[in-house]
Length: 89
Image (cartoon, rainbow, N blue to C red; front, side, top):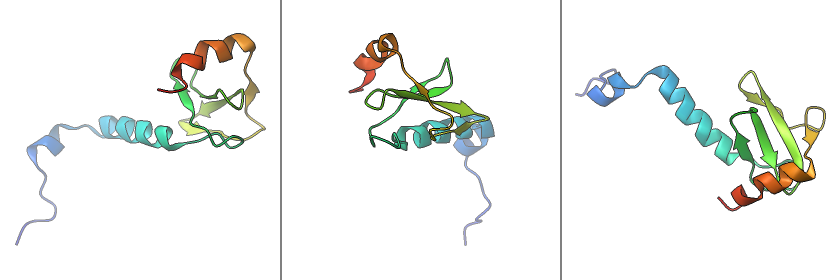
């Protein structure tokens, strides 16, 4: 009978942080704008999720996306233009 607690070599080499980053990216890619239900774009530099259709940016605070009206900010016309090429990515 196989040992349930056994770990393969590839699992040993993965750090918990690497797994958390991968999980975070997967989860972020599943989030949608609460208003328009459109996909959000992750802005790593400013730690925000961008909704082009909703014209809003939602902050990520302490690794937690805040997708409420209380925390979001309106995007400027320049920011919308900047993110437009990423809309279909």
